[in-house]
Image (cartoon, rainbow, N blue to C red; front, top):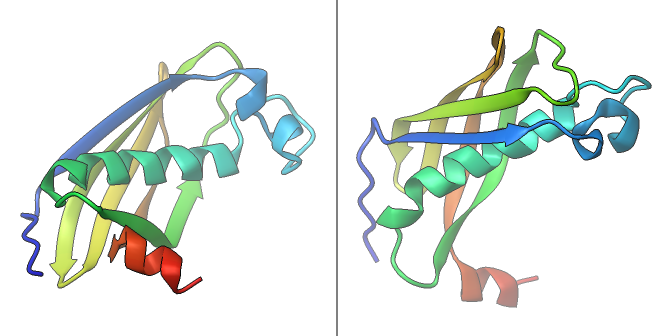
Length: 126
């Protein structure tokens, strides 16, 4: 099945940082600031939701690669926003550029790759 997703598709997701999103909670650090693993999850979710409207029923995407620079700490109670842009489509491989912000400015940026899957076939192979 041919699936067409145009480059340039944009996504945007936001969250309010809680203790559950912190390095102390994730175990990736000892301080109560927005965790890099939480940033990765937000980045993946932003990319996923941006392309879902283009996928036929029964199809989804899975993350296959993340490159991220998390350059600024964000405290509990502050809003974090991730914006993504689809910059490359190579058959079923999708490449996104992402930027994260909190209420004071940029907190990081990176690239993320996802692969389009037929969910049923994917799960049957596990």
